[in-house]
Length: 239
Image 1: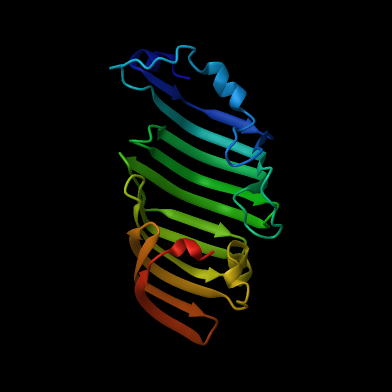
Image 2 (image 1 turned 60 degrees about the vertical axis):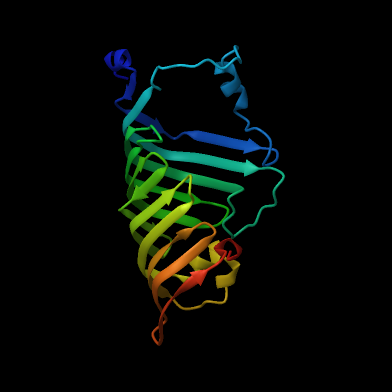
């Protein structure tokens, strides 16, 4: 930790190293608190009367992050498990490895770079061999112009991803030269009938839950290819 930066209202962590660590997070239902709530409560102010403050929030930077051989588990105990399917309510990760830099942790001016991220998810059978990318923010606008993901036998490249947390507007430009149908089926039951590898090139924009398909070019197997554009009124129903 750079002590001198604290004088300028900055918390600068120059290096983080964790090896062979274990993290377990859970809550009983989606509406209850997490199991670490007691830690948050311990540091909460005892004076509940809101006071106006002109002081700027603490600026936090965490650089040279290296986490290796980690084990992490997250569960909402009241929700059912779905072995072999991706489930945001339950995941169990082994061999978690991360190298990253976060020069700014301010969500209004976020700057984050992932050099490499890999892990083995046990419940769904997802093996992330490598994830690289960057994320930036300005106010309520989040964006990235570089995300590369290798997962099981599939690969995804995102050259543009923009999302506004206030207006829910988004845009996405992504492509994949290879998606294994078994990998796709992990994330959607609608794709379980696919038995041939496919590729795609997509350009989407919209406002959640609506989406405009400006261009979607896809190839399935060796004999099927198509290009479409159009509108989706509510893509949240497609899962």
